Every structure is written in C-alpha cells, then in structure tokens.
Length: 246
Image 1 (tube, rainbow, N blue to C red):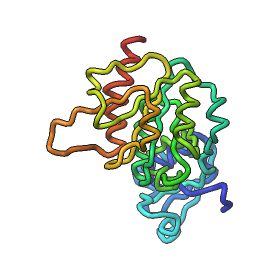
Image 2 (cartoon, helix red, strand yellow; image 1 turned 90 degrees about the vertical axis):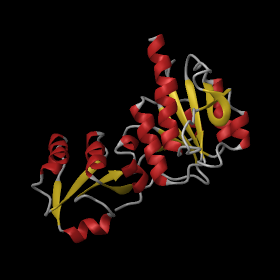
Image 3 (tube, rainbow, N blue to C red; image 1 turned 180 degrees about the horizontal axis):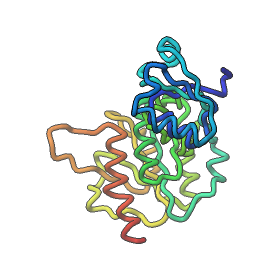
C-alpha cells in the first residue's frame, strides 16, 4: 500500500467510501460474509464493480480495530490548501465549518458528519495542533469525509479573513456570546467557527469573528463537546435561517 492510500474500516464508513468512488478494494471477513449487516456494503461494491476479497479475521485485525468484519482500501482524502480554498467556487448561501484546535480524531470525524449532514460546503481545520484525517477520523465521520471537502491551513485567522473577502459572515461559538435565540443568523454565506472543548477558540480567531453566539445550557453540564455543539448550532441556528429565507 502506498502512502497515498489508507484503509477504512466499519460497515457504514466502507459503504460510503465505495459510493463516493474512493475505494479500489473491499475486504470482507469470511465469518460475516453471509450476515444481513453486510448487504449494504456488498451491494455498494457490486454497483461500483469493485472486487471483494474474502479474508480471515487475522487479516482484518491487522488492518484496524473494531472493523466489523469489513475494510476498504481508499485514496487518502485530499486536503485543500489556502490557495485552493481562496479560489473555491462557493455559492451565495454556502456554509463553511471551521474547527479551531480540535485534536481528537473522533471529534473531528463527528464534526465532519454533522457538517456534511447539514449541507456544509467545506470543513476547515489547522495543520498544526489539530487532528489529521486519519482512518479513525474517517470512520467516526460515518463516511462524511468521503464527501465533504476539507481544507487544512497553517493560519486560521488569515483563512477567516480570506473567507470574509469572499463574502462570508463569520460566526463563532463562544460561551460569552449572545444566545442564539437573540442573534439572527447573518444572511448570505456563513462560516461557523467552533473551538476545542474547555479552551474554546484561540484569541486571534475569536477576534476575527463577526458575531459570537452561545448555546443555552440549562442543565448541570456546563458545556458540550465540539461536534455536539456544532450540530446544535447548525440545526438550531444556521439551517433554520436558510429555510425561512428559502
């Protein structure tokens, strides 16, 4: 396997990678080949005319943990750079999700899943001190990283300014912000910025936001993790504003 390829494990992630045209091989454990849970994967592979190789459990164990008896070899998700982001053909109502300092691959994958499900046009994250697009992140995304463009940049504040130049309003999620029910979502393209749990956004990134909003926390838990907070903001704030205008 060359460095440009990696393995994705888990039934949903494999099926989505196959449907997205990223996989060039599917490996299925002999002990699960005939189980109903594999039908979706096998049908996707059949539709894509992809080879399916039977393998013993030891082979799947060597590919990755918690594989559910299936793996796919895929092209590594392509990462856009700052120049490609600046020239990306964004639409007039697009949403971009910006992650500031998310270091856990599971949280990155879950955030990508929320972003893609909500129709985001792109996910942006830092290169340094942030989770990379590892197999664990791809799996946690449940296939979302097979569909969602991802830009990894060296300077998030500069990237935010680039998005502003492209017409984006930048909304940061911050505990000190205005409650989302009191702050209308800006019209036009919107970039939603979410920081790491506990530390939140970095100072420079926070200062670059046009609007700071906060989620109402009425329980005893003082905060949500990044992916849960992102999902709440997208579905309680951004998506409804577009539906009302639509």
